[in-house]
Image (cartoon, rainbow, N blue to C red; front, side):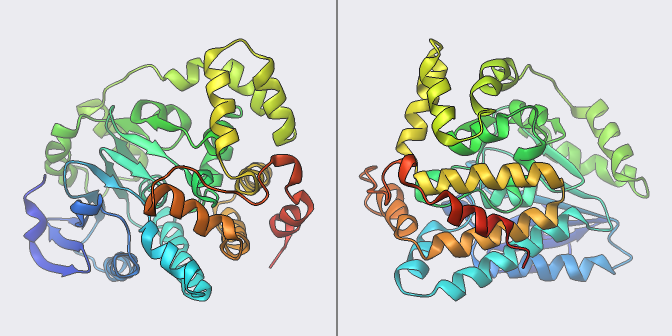
Length: 355
């Protein structure tokens, strides 16, 4: 990992390391034992530092990366979420999500170039931090995922916006199956801008001061020439059958199309969907399609927060976290248990609510 975390004016707060090295403001998620899973304190520290550096003339560019070998960020701390929804602390949970979503929006609209270096695991809230920046770097072997449907939740942190903008209907596929995709796929799908081998991250940091004063597009182009690599995306190769199935208007029709295919990957996708939370999948499907109609990050974030507040009062979220994270029996009892019983109209009302 980069050794310049302790440069000029270091600040270390709540598992966030902040330093200024030359013109770079460097923020490192520093909770490697938990794959940098995000806590409220970490989100607040990131917010505070970005607000501070916004008006600091000595910082012309911000870099966000994760400490440790295992990954950039595994997302929010799921056990904290479980405690909140199990102990009637729903308002506290909603406040944390609001803080996180505002941070993601700040990164997207930041007035100085933000460079994100996403190695290893990048899931959920990690995607919110990494994939809305101006210059998004992944490694070929990075593992991206928004697996919220497995735990009775739905993609958030602007994930529905990114999924909506992905080619064809791959966004629906990723959300409804909770599938993992590589850094190679992330570039083709719009979750990252370029591939750089992880061992070259330090070289990227050393080169960034040479781009001081340039806009994000020119910085990205220069970095790609110097360090970028290319590989073909397996998911893009699968787009024809994915589009055929996941362009269907309802969850039931998507499963019907998957079941009618002889493709082994289609059978796997159907199996994944049948294991996931039916209500969560309905929320994801409607949310992505609403996001596609708007193509507006803030609207997507606001919609995701409404859906989060809806889902956190349902038993599926606590049950999903119990089954996948706490007890790890991988056998959640969803209510309702089938997609045919999901209250589609209730989800639609939450999706459409203007305030």
